[in-house]
Amino acid sequence: MKVKLGVVVFPGSNCDDDMVYVLQDIMEQEVVKLWHKDKNLQDVKGVFLPGGFSYGDYLRSGAIARFSPIMESVIAFANKGGFVFGVCNGFQILCESGLLPGTLLHNDKHKFICKNVFIKAETNKSMVSREIITTRALKIPIAHGEGKYYAPPETIRDMRQNGQIIFRYCDQYAKLSSESNPNGSIENIAGICNATKNVFGMMPHPERAADDELGNTDGVTIFESIIKSII
Image (cartoon, rainbow, N blue to C red):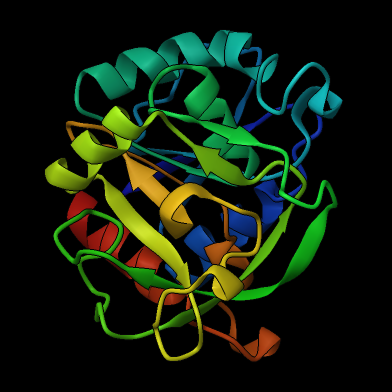
């Protein structure tokens, strides 16, 4: 069974075609592109905000894209329980829009980082991690300059208690350490969800680890989790 999924395209998006390819060709779903100036979500069952540099990352990453017309519809869709998933810049936009708690700050070393890292799922009771073995490390690429996740201590406490911390940076053996944290994110956080657990964001790029041609398919289990949750 196929579901109709939408990938939002902002000026400056550069991972939109990667996301479309994985959802359409690898996961064999129906996919439409949603232009940022439009408001019609075309009856999709899930919305994906891809990585890139929306509006050139002026002001703050995601700060301008948050005001694109399409985001009014995305926010309304999310508030009604619709599935929304943001990767990298998409994660930043979701935080800027208030759909996710916290913010993404400049990496600790104030340098753009592009490399493979390891993450582990903190729970397999979420829409994006239900197919993942929580003791397994997934090798997923990152590519960001503002990927340091931060939220106030009381927010982190509430997120931890509510199961909203989905992914953490780890080493290849799924062990957490400061050395395995590439950007200084609080508590090694790599991915989170909202309180109602239908909006998700993560900095690593699972769509760049979902094809045999790349020699790494660790990201496929994330997309499998999503599709099985939506269908």
